Image (cartoon, rainbow, N blue to C red; front, side, top):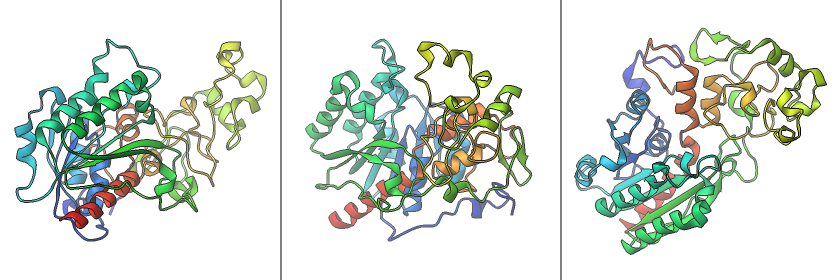
Length: 365
């Protein structure tokens, strides 16, 4: 069967379930393309719905998680709507990743309404009162507005009689071939709950482990058997730049004629984390929504003169190779698919969180 094809719906919607099947249903808030839900589904949880304001997420979420997608602004979501999605008689698990952009160093204006998303999520939790809650976000949330936003969220949970734990987890310690750190919070009304324990702290997976066997591509090329294994086209100057780039190096290694003018002035000399190649035998850098562009970070292929393909970015985010992001026949848009992939919760980290929730439910039911 063609990689990435969906001619057999039953096969495309099947996932390999690990461990005992927990009798719990999951609703995913800010579900995106479904990375968090898919990690839970891999561990046997029943995904009963995903909610997001971005219509572009619908196909990826529904197809891969076999669950309905509800397009809705969280401010407009009612508790009855959430409660109606959960399977009666089973423990209810609510998971979510409030969009991280409001908490980044590039977007911290008080007038930006997005920073209130976590508060709105907390208000929804307070009304739904799920048995277990999982929240994932960028570590900088701990310091955003001197930590008051996160502290208020935790207080809201504890006032509602939840047991709460959180920590910053390093992706490679959980099998992710990417140096991504995420803030993970777990809360339960059933009793004390524990965070995931590292499973790969002795040997991290690498770029080679994830993408080393994919067919080679030229810049601007596409693999005949997988429409998402395609690389963006490079300009003439960027072709010369990437051919001079060393794995793990920077643009400082190049001849002067190749260095961008903005990097020659004093204000640009500190920006070395662009125009770089990844290293085969190390985890990749954090995959962003712009990972398909050579000039947007250290997203150059370790040896081929091009940036990462869309499929390679998805694999480094922990998605399986047959995960689908767009409907059959739909034109592949780098910006759209890159956003779906880069904004996703890494699947392997999601699966680790699901393992902890699963164990907690087994111990408390």
